[in-house]
Image (tube, rainbow, N blue to C red; front, side):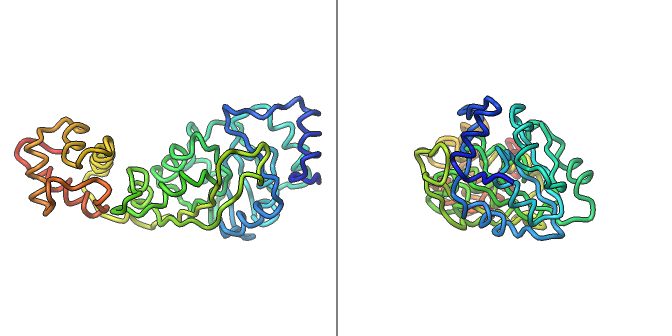
Length: 290
């Protein structure tokens, strides 16, 4: 089996298959030999486990997952990579490559078909440009998975793992915290990749909650409220909610006060429970419902 963290091996594979890394697909291959084993271990991958991987690249993480898991299913959008993966993963009969866009796959059905009777985790080196949409697709579908352990840009990791109600929090922080308990595990320097990105990366783990962090009557309306609140960060929550949901300012102010908040409160000061209280107050306003 080739050494997939060796630059000469990677270059030889690229030349053999006439493969050029794509910026459009956010391709940066891991070349630090210590990163992928640590990533797989951080995800809690064991012999009774099914692993869903997104974006296997040439298979450097895939190999580490396959050596530990019962089965690995890797979803890859780049149709140039399956021939390379057939060579780099030769002999690993517990790996299946699915050539599709992960945002278009019925993941619930795929997990039911491929991982029957197994505990399931997600582990991936995610393309930076599409980190948030992928994470939200995984969480919003309420898949039967234990955790999502991914390598992402450090700046994105800070936003994703920020606690709601703190200065760094935003819509993505609130959405992730609603579905999971997030934490940053370790950082990865640019030189650990080929080609080297200009930023530091971080491994984060989202432990999926058995139930959402707060109970709301209208989940769709709740997230519409959260997105609206953070839609114009320089404004107060009242101004942003009024603009984002197209509600009269007086109605929003009245709801904030009814929920116990100053009408000048900033969105980043609000917790998940606070947003639930504001949503309930808005629903009780005579002029309309979120």
